[in-house]
Image 1 (tube, rainbow, N blue to C red):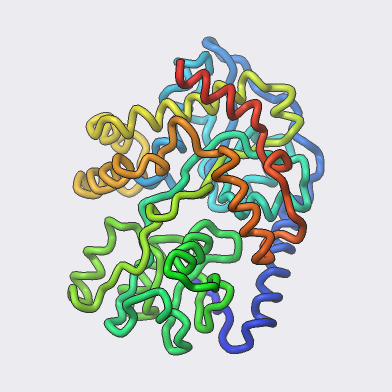
Image 2 (cartoon, rainbow, N blue to C red; image 1 turned 30 degrees about the vertical axis):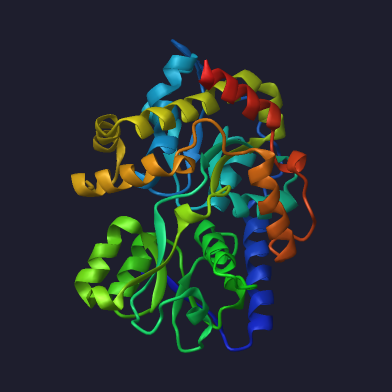
Length: 358
């Protein structure tokens, strides 16, 4: 398990150190400065868009991640299985993108904004998820509300700055009426993915962390119902969570391919949200780890009741993106204020919405 200590004690210097570290990582990993040229290949039925996703093919993220493979042909794309690369993090994917080895990649939205500061050719053009089936959970019976996380004795698992779960934790604090973010927590440890956070909670190495909602029963089995409290659900605060990103060069030279790619994502999201059996078939084909039918149904129920989890008719509008830009700037995650047009290729996004609608 990869666990890194974060911020014990001197919160100010720890915050500065974390921000400097994440900035260094982003800049170093984006050392390739050439924009992606047009690099689509022509298959029998049309254009192939080479793309990556930045986390495993788990059930909550599966429809938008593999949507182009499933529905791309309906929009004139040729999308073989090897058009998709599954990577472990956003910086690595952006490095491949900017060196011309990918046409598009998924990215955590806040992480994309961080990278955008040093690579202003990056733009997002298609929503992936506006929320997901995550929950912030306490296994300490004395920790029953978000305000309790600021007790120095409470051990909280977080992501690196810019991570989507770190952002949702901050949104949960705001929803609870706290004028604070995860940066202000006094006793934190960085654990980068949901499964590792679950393992740490089950091992008794932490009191609070974000996990998939379908894993909460495992914590209840371990600690008992009276000890486990869901402090916040990600679906309570939909936002710009994950999106697809490319370069301005590729988007301008391959507008039609980008529109078709995004339309295929939106259409796959629509189909999977509407029918559990269709979603189950998708999981059987692509998902890692052989998730049980119970997990599949739990994820589908969450998505069915939270349309922003698998967006099909929106997800990157100004009303969604601009509050995220404001929050990121006010909380020091980006150094300069960015406008909607600085970060979103609205023409591709709107054309994709119209194509998917038809």
